[in-house]
Length: 243
Length: 109
Length: 113
Image 1 (tube, chains in turn purple, green, brown):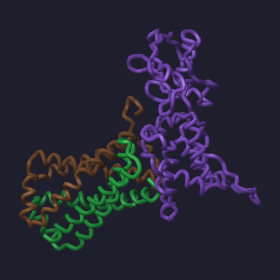
Image 2: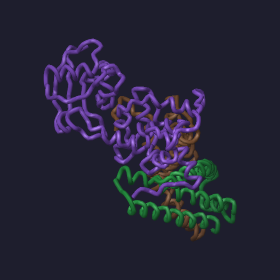
Image 3: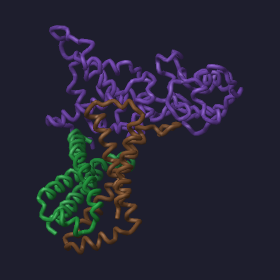
Image 4: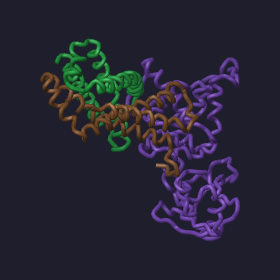
């Protein structure tokens, strides 16, 4: 193992890359590296992290071309053939500074896809029975562990090609709620996710599924939404094409 | 695409799956017996079944292709709105017209 | 595009599906026009078919048959994922679909006069 790690970091709004050299240590994570750089070499470097143990998703950024959690990425895994590390902010989101991006559109789309529980006007007369082994509950359970880190959104080429696409995280969340027997907002949610900017725009590149650090599979959640979209169109309910 | 366009694309895809498989088989079989115009037209001449098949094939393709192209123009060329819809609809009509003409041509010749 | 040591299978499949679709969309009108020459009788079509004996044209034809088979094969995979809730667990599916399409193209080429 070479003793020095060459690190290239995108600065400002991406107008330049700064070069750093960091001592290589065993079991070093990329978060260790960027933290060391910020604390000891350049205190003006902006980046995010919180839990540093793979639970919060705050540290997501682009490492050698792939969006990853820096706290869960070993340098030994991530270095390129030349032994270099290149750090950039997450793709598809506006850069605030250096490695920190504005997550607002990501959360807005979560809301726009109706990715929140809708209890309805009045409480139901009785509890809704939700057998854990029912197909709907299983489908929901497959996707509810999403912590909205934004990696799938950054990975998605369709988001890159059309910025109005709701994206894998929002649609995955919507799918978990579509399968929630207690939810009373299904009609509005289906209308939201079957707009032109919804599930139809997914082209099954599967970058989201490949890269999700929680091993979720948004591709198949979106496929489920597509099936519902087809049923909905067959039954005559359809949204007009957005201008 | 709206829900209806999405449905149209997937439904025509299902139809085309069968039509294309049959067509590929026909092409390769036709090749084996030598692809002269006479040979081709002998098979299609006054063949009502083939005419119906080709007409369905053409109709499905005339719906399927423009919707696919619409996605491409939107995502890769940045087209939007009316100009995009009109352009792909126009292409679909061209395909339909030329295709039905071709289907009739090999039927009537 | 996500940089990767391996071209991502899903992206490769989607790209090939799209490119083959574009090729077919360009070819189809020409194909219809060619067949339409049959309206001039067998001689019209024969005249056009004579042009197609040219090796360059034969290569283009092979490319288009392969494109059609490829678009079909990858389309079937997509339909399975979307409509049949199929989960792609094997790394061999996309290469397999591409191989099947290439095989169909070769079958065409081998039988070409």
